[in-house]
Amino acid sequence: MELLCGVDEAGRGPLAGPVTAAAVILPADFPIDILADSKVLSETRRREAEVVIKAKAVAWGVGWASNDEIDKMNILQAALLAMRRAVNALTVRPDRLLVDGIYCPCCDIPSTAIVKGDATVPAIMAASILAKTARDAWMESYALREPAYMFEKHKGYPTAEHRRIILERGPSAIQRRTFKITSPE
Image (cartoon, rainbow, N blue to C red):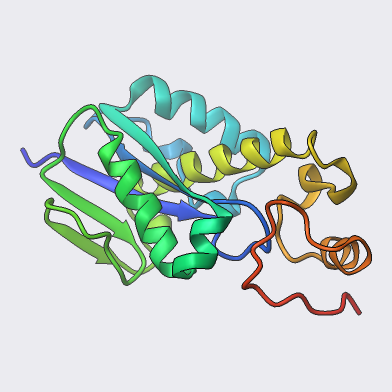
């Protein structure tokens, strides 16, 4: 039986913070009914699923690319780097990667890109959940260092409130400097 690994990222759209990726190998008997694209699950359901994924997965890994790396190489290349780091964090080597989207990270494991895989492939759904919960937790923790930016609320996404704070206070230490900030109106 081929050992498949789902790979997905979270945080391509925010104006601040890292981009995060996860890689997950699920066992055949995993309860897939708890899975969905992380964007459609409530925060509570994501956190509940995260616990089950981490407990029952054959292996899982998380990888990061910092806001500085994003600015140096662009968001797509940084997301692919985070994916590669997530795959490298696995304790079990998969036979094939199933990657959400149209691009695959450069690595020595055969890979297949699947558009909307985070809504259709259980292992990618699991990776989507781990990437999102890891990034959200990081942003909530970082919010304690720069509370004026309210990262615990918007997680760095370009909400009107976040854009207003940036325009009033200037960029935070984790701002993606190559991302354009528009007026909140």
